[in-house]
Length: 379
Image (cartoon, rainbow, N blue to C red; front, side):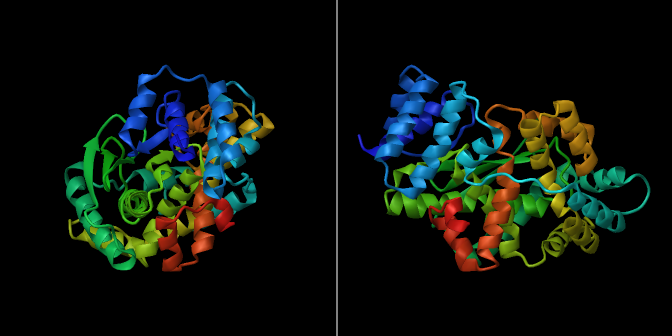
């Protein structure tokens, strides 16, 4: 059995210990069947497996992936790894803090941009959680946005032949939407109708999950890397490895790569369904709130590196992120999870890394969609 096949075995064996660690697998079914038929392999043995693969491997891409997966296995085996080291080993970027002065400036700018009446947190939450797209019109609006974004993506970056995606509407989930990549150039995006989807958010959400975000990246890489070039390793989409940071960076940058003014774009499409959206106000608020994406990663560092309590982390997120107690509680549950706690860094750091590397160059964005690049390649 060659090294890549053993790598896929490692991915699938780790996935038996952590639900969701394998975000998607569309590789050789016999490998998956073999792993599923065996007794779960002990984490300590998986650490050893990852180490042997790293010794034999000569690919920089696979080495970065294996370092992340070895780290996941070490944590499963009970090893204590300092938080910043864990993040760097898993995702290829060492986490850093943003000063609270940055958040204070964002608060001042939001104070000027948000409609009046209430505290700053109340006003921000009213803007973020209010003005929801009516659930009965949501399917038609999201389909319209998806169709428009797909056309723009195809014009600018192309799409593999016969790629397809569908929207499903679900309830009782902790997220707003999730892309389930099924293989065969197909995605299923589940949209949670329990979550109020703000008019300012829906276009960004569809770009993030579908075009030219997660679905577009996965379909291109399946088509070009897996099918055309025979790179079997691409068929396992793994949490806990740099592949995820690049994917979140692509998705965070997605809408800006196909739409010059995405608030204006959202307002135009929503207007076709009789929904008013103030694009000018949305634009000002979006620009002002950008630094607040760093609040939760800061809280994770304070909790794991400085030793503040979960209650203190929640208060920190509420204060600086201007979010509700419910949202802050959810954030804390995420950053205290033994496996998922390091994933929070992929959003802001992935976006920053990819954005700085692409610098509005569509050819570079196309490379992100179609090549096996690591954070070190972009740094």
